[in-house]
Length: 240
Ligand code: ADP
Ligand code: MG
Image 1 (tube, protein in one colour):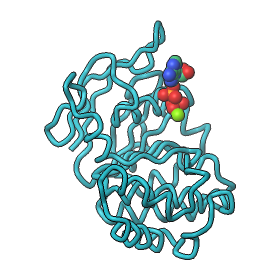
Image 2 (cartoon, protein in one colour):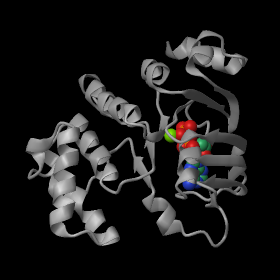
Image 3 (cartoon, rainbow, N blue to C red):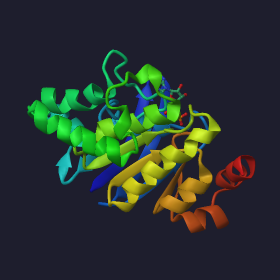
């Protein structure tokens, strides 16, 4: 579904991605792990064109999204993204946070958008929060709203950039459970995470990045039991 072919990304003199090649299949869940500054967020942001790769190509469902004439808005609509810091609209109720984009971007009727929004809020366990403002929610609740808000656009792919890193420990689980449910439902997902146990349990594949290079692209059992690269071994010793 997603083909990443030898992409590089530089910011001025700084080479952040140094030739990444991998594929993500439909329904596959990929965990992207690696030290801080290794290029994980940049790689994720290239997939939804928040960053443009300097060289190389990315193809989604046969359509080259890095082509000069690619339909950027159309592509972004197919890809949901969830961030560490939620990025909810603070001046809108939870319900409005969910209905805004489908009405504005997809031209969905208010009634239809609300119906879908309420279904999704129920799915993430927040049916009773439709009318409150984000400031009244806990971090875990905010992140579940952010996930529901992405899903209301019916994305084909969901990207997560450290979705639990800003949460108090007792809220991590409720967010990971929502993500696990999404993975079980067959969603194609790429997740940057430091939650090693979650990555091991939920992902089909681990991408280990170090200094802009993909050092491992391997099933979780293999990665966690016998990582090939010394860098991955060192990394695992520190985080486990
Ligand atoms: P990670 O998510 O693995 O921590 P990032 O992809 O955020 O790593 O960043 C990789 C490197 O690229 C870092 O050195 C970071 O400072 C740099 N970087 C990221 N975004 C930009 C940008 N917009 N401009 C300049 N440097 C950037
Ligand atoms: Mg990052």
